[in-house]
Image (tube, one colour):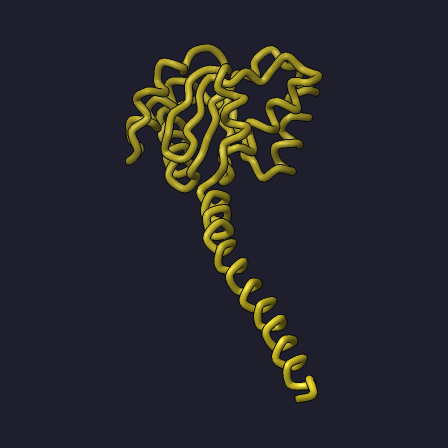
Length: 173
């Protein structure tokens, strides 16, 4: 790889880091070509972009990026692949499912919701993490719930009141 190709690869990584809110650094080394292809197909179906990267190029992309990824640099050892995603927990779910039959990928680190998670031990937590949109939807539902209860109570009370008035109106005097 000559200098021009390296510069182009770094620029592409910087662009991907800027446009994608979440990414996972994993180790897929030692997977057979068949298993790697299978993982790539699953990633494609789930809307996750999987790239195998050179650690030195990724480190330079981190340095050039607007965000600060200094905490991730120590994880750049051995074989590294990066999973770019728009949904924070999608790669964690994919990794857990894929590892039911395979020893890898191993999670090195993740950058999700502007937070850094280091190590494979974080996989269970990342699988359960909710996106900002999911949290907003839950909050809206919680805020709407009391209002719906009040409206429903008013409607049922109104029906009871009209029934009482109708009964009173029909009573002979």
